[in-house]
Amino acid sequence: MKTTLYRPESEDFAHRMISEALDILVDERVRDEVLEAVRALPDHLTPELSWSRREAVDEGDTNTLKATLRLLLPSGGGIGERWFRVQHGWSGDEVGHIASLLRAVEAALRFHADHAVLDGTAKTLLLDASRAKGLARWWERCRR
Image (cartoon, rainbow, N blue to C red; front, side, top):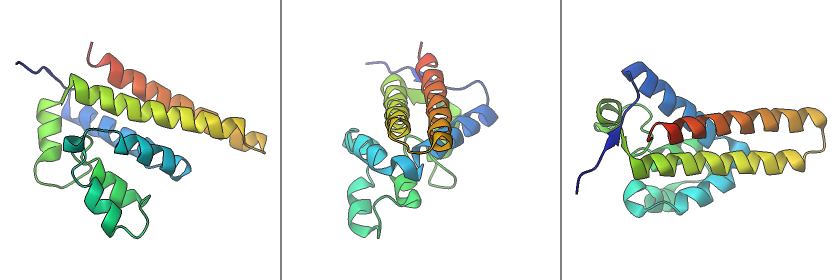
């Protein structure tokens, strides 16, 4: 079976898209929702998750979540994951998983906005939800 890999047009763009996706996914306001969505991913995409749950002081810790997502969205050093993603991209299924994580964040932020007491807080949450939605759309478009 042949697998098609989808890659952004440049290394800088790939780095930026990884960074933007991680910034949204490690938002403490939606920590529980993201952890639930990450747990739903296939095990081969998140090999660190079971280790992270046992070893992390707080399973919502930003570094723990980044380590869990390192194969999909490698954030820095690592043993070649970032180079591989920048050079070769993501499979269609992987792109779909990234988009679904971003959609989960969007939904969670909108939910929190609907239940916010302060108008300013609700507006900020909705702006961030729109940002997550836009990024999810970009990931979804890259596999078409």
